[in-house]
Amino acid sequence: MATMENQIKVGIVGCAGRMGQMLVTHFNATDGCVIAGATEHAGHAVIGQDVGVIAGLGPLGVIVGDDAAHMIAVVDAVVDFTIPEATLEHARLAAQAGAAIVIGTTGISDEQGEELARAARHVPVVWAPNMSVGVTLLLALTEQVARVLDDSFDIEILEMHHRHKVDSPSGTALGLGHAAAAGRNSELRDVKQAVRDGHTGERPVGEIGFATLRGGDVVGDHTVIFAGDGERIELSHKAASRKVFAAGAVRATQWTIGAGPGLYSMRHVLGFES
Image 1 (cartoon, one colour):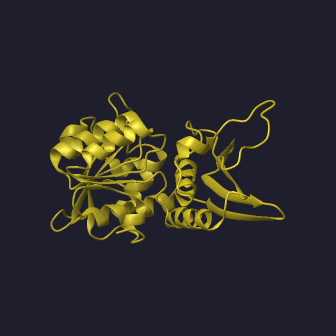
Image 2 (cartoon, helix red, strand yellow):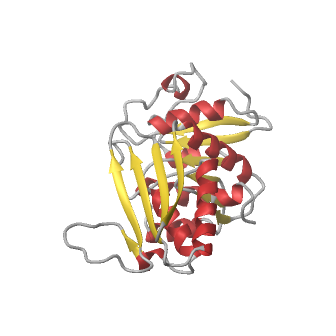
Image 3 (cartoon, one colour):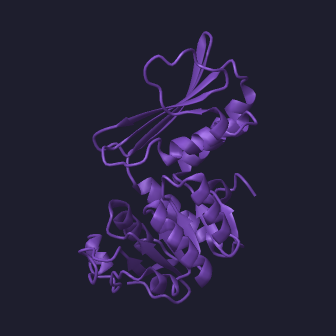
C-alpha cells in the first residue's frame, strides 16, 4: 500500500458500485495518488470491509464507512459517481472541508447544477457527465460543427446505454446538446425535443432532437447527426469499458491540485478552455 506522504489523498464515495470499484482500481495504480477514504450509504453490506478487497485488489488498509462528512474532512479530493441528491450533499461537505471534488454523476438538473456552482465558490469542482478524453473532444467538435453549419442542417443526438441506466437522455447526450446549442448561439432549453410520439407535425427549424436506446450491457454510445439536404455528417463515440471514465477522473483529480475555486469541466482539465 502506498504511503500518504507527498501523495494526493483521494476519497471515493459510492465505492462498492461498478464505477466505484473501477475508481478504486485506477487510483490505487496511479503514482502520486493514495486512497485515503471510502464510503457507501448507511446500511450497505460492505460497511466495515476493506475497500481493496471489495474491488478485488486485496487489502489496502482503508475500511469502508458511511460517514461522508468525516471522510471528506481528511482527504484532498473527493471523487463522486453516485446520484444527484448524494452528489449535492458531498459537494456541500467538500466546500466546507476545503476539499476538491470531481463529479461524474449524471442526471443533474439545471437547478442542481446551480448548487454545484455555489460549492465551486469555495473549492475546485470538476463536473463532467462523461470524463473520457474522447467524449471531451466530441463535445468540442460538436460545438465547432454546429457553429459552421446553418440551421438548414437538423441536429439529432442518439445515445444508447445498458438496461440499468435510470436517467434519460444521458448526461453526455445533454452535454452534446448544450454544445450544439452553444455553437448556434442558443440555449438548449429553448430548442430541445426529447420526446416524439404520435402525430408530431413537421420538425421545427433549429430543433435539437434526442433519441434514447436502452439494452444489454452497453457502456455508452453517442452520435451527433447533422442532417442536411443531400448529405449527412455524423460524429460518434463508443465507450467499450468504464476504464475510460476512471482514467479521466484520475486526470481530473490530479488537475485540481493547485487549481483555484471554480466550476470546471473536462475541457478545462484537457486544456481546451482556460
